[in-house]
Image (cartoon, rainbow, N blue to C red; front, top):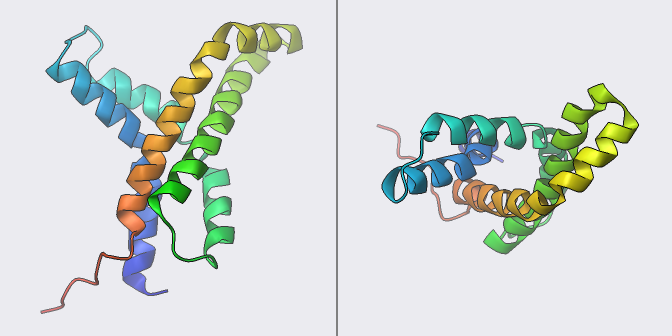
Length: 141
């Protein structure tokens, strides 16, 4: 691995969790303006996207031996990390109120799992855009 690839991986891990918020905020701004705005979607994306970053780093570190990394592999890992991120976020926020409230919160918010998983797929695709092998090292002057 060279330094340029390492920079791309770090940028991908930092920016990819914000990709769903950017996409939803852009769609909201262009087609159906709501009172929320781009800041709302970026905030939700960062709150829900950065907690599963630690498992994403572990998954990526163990997957380094396996090449090539395709967009489908990144999307599948994003799908799984989206589900993990959903449960992590819901249980983390509801754990303050006790186990019974946590289970109630999960039961009520269960329809949001597909949304979280699709956001994971979008983030996985965005990560793939950073790490794909077609990107060459920039020419030095």
